[in-house]
Amino acid sequence: MLISEAYIKSRVPQWILESQTYYLVITDLQGAYAYVNPFFAQSFDFLATDFIGRPIDAAIHPDDIKICTAAAAECLSNIGKSVPLQIRKPDSKGDYFWSHWEFSAFLDEKGELIGVLCMGHDITESARASQQIKQSEGKLRAIMNSTTNSIVLVGRDYKILAFNKKTEKEALIYYNRQIKEGENFWDYVLKGTEEGFVLHFQQAMYGETVVIENQFSFARDKQFWFEVTYFPVYDHDKGLIGVAINTVNINARKVAEERVKFQNEQLKEIAILQSHAVRRPVSSILGLISLIDKENNIDENEEYIALLEKCTQELDVIIHKIVQKANDLENENQ
Image 1 (cartoon, helix red, strand yellow):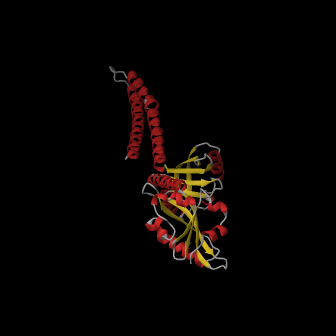
Image 2 (cartoon, one colour):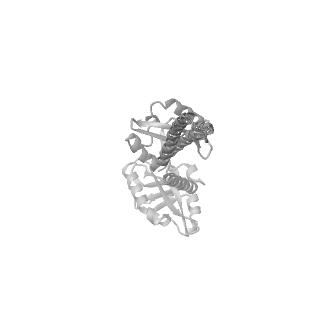
Image 3 (cartoon, one colour):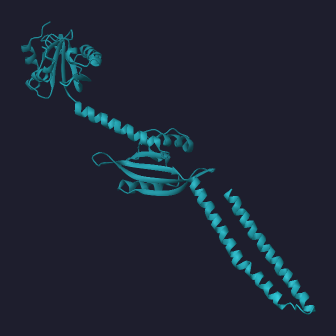
């Protein structure tokens, strides 16, 4: 059935017919152009074709023809329903651009189907921006997943917005559960750390970066040291999205620090033994030696020699203590 232009203009609002923003296309039931508004005709005049009577694929990317056919069939089967779709249209440079359309059934005066009314507009900029956002998100996620740190993005309502693979693994190790976006982060705040968590989270919400070191107890036999960093995260318009929580297991470092601390204490004790404990019997020995009569073998010498032997034994005990502490340090380093 031929759809007259006069009938189309009587049924379609004037602003759509004369729009310089929206394309208007009406096809017949065979999928051929029955009407295009001036804006559509001007936008695609480089195709050098009279659209009326031509199939709709004259100005559609070949891969999107099936999408258009399916949308037309759906709206014809559901009168009154508008079917949205995005398809690529050709440009004057030999490339294609993205456009958004809505298809709906077009009826005659008796309410009978006579075609499909199609309204569309160029969404190139929004599609490009969306693609750039997706690429940026992909790059950010790749960076997050390449780090050995656990990173969680928590919204202002404490809901989990995003996390990396390291976080997913550690949630299974320490909490024995599968972390999911949308969960309440409070489910992962350990008992006894609630007050500190709220304080540091709120500090980050006010723009501060907070770094803490703490030992967390996941079970009686599972205590680990972590360095936790809270920092604010903003969107492109500098609006606060939430707080990123970066967690690093520093247990090995803290154990090493404790070992060094112990070794330093041992070294201090050795220094005290060398400077004070050893000095006392050595001074006594030197004093006794000076009292011994080296020319006459008198009875007093025997008393001095007995005291000398006692001091020597005392010195021997101290030396053994020094040797033992030195051995302990050596064993700690192994």
